[in-house]
Amino acid sequence: MLTGKLLDMSVNAKSRVFWTNITATIKLAIQAKNTADDSVVRMTLNGEGAQSVFWFERDDAESLINGILTDSLEELLTTTKVENNLLRLK
Image (cartoon, rainbow, N blue to C red):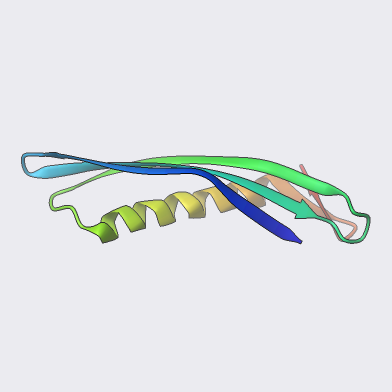
């Protein structure tokens, strides 16, 4: 059973002439409970990113957040393994 909790998320946009710099950070707590033996794997995933755009739109911030979340979940997949039908840290 996989559960998660968003611990922190921030998005900042700073405008300049002809561009806007967008920065975002995310902190996500993930817990996986192995139902076979009731063991638990816990991880805290931290992600950050930045991008510059000519004209700021809400979709730009959403796209940045989605990219950070995707990278964080890929990190989860690379740092865990399934062994004897149980999720374990590598």
